[in-house]
Length: 210
Image (cartoon, rainbow, N blue to C red):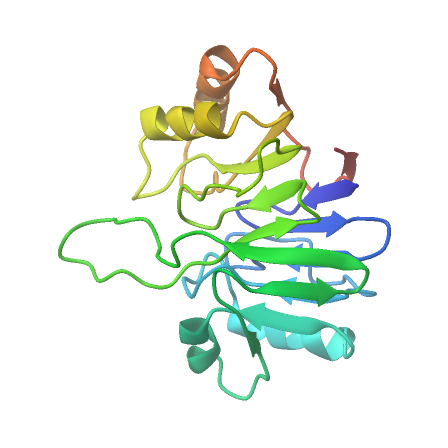
């Protein structure tokens, strides 16, 4: 399996039998020219996870790609045909199996801000994109966790505790676009994460094996 990080929450996962693009949002760049996609998966409705204008361009360039979102996000994408999914669903996308996991809710930012829906996506039982929540993977051993690094809803201590609870073989930091110095948080993940977990900071727009 290979992944390519296009900044923030946007990641291309190539399983060898499917090409899956996650969260092409406003904080991410470089994904615009992708083709040959089997699916585009959106974890939730916030603009840093889905840029509606560039999403439409992607769909025109990838007419056979399925667009998978939660129901709330689908309702906000005018003129776009989305397949809605919720935790508990199992999707066949290209040659990959994608399980929708989590509670279905975005992590709380503040008590006065209503929660929105959030899907975590588990690819072939080995790689988890949790969206904006601390989503349990639902498997005993996870190969790769895409770990949110900075956000209004996130404290680095909680992110470290989540990393320890999941204890993946490899952790790839994502969702760093709100931080002036993401490397500071990466050091916490490296120093405080499980001994058996390897930290992999992916160079932007460069495919890496996981």
